[in-house]
Image (tube, rainbow, N blue to C red; front, side, top):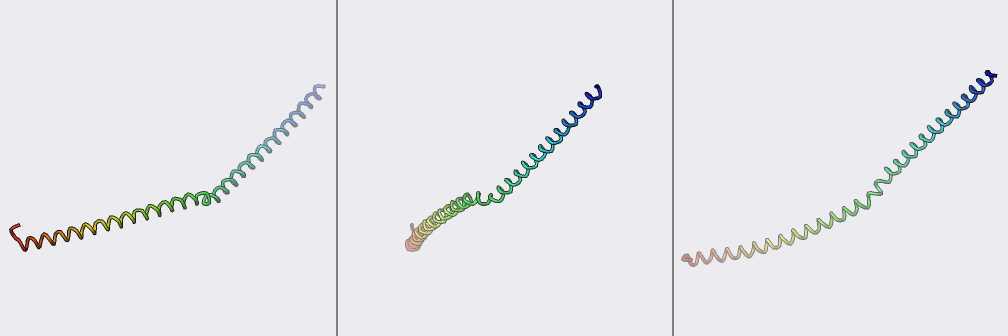
Length: 106
């Protein structure tokens, strides 16, 4: 009788070990599938990253073009103002020089 109890215990231990081994294999399979799914998701994300960024890049490019156009307009306006001032000061300088030449007492 003790041999049959020992035999049952050994068989139960063997079945328990088989269950543990099956569970370990299943766990490893689940981990491998999760890692593969994560790699696939990362690859899909990397593939679509440029598409995700494109609207923001286009918007930034548009704002940069607007800023350049505004600065160009301001530069041209400032250049016209400086040319007008230059012409006026040149005329005033010529008039002052002529007045000085014609009437050195001034």
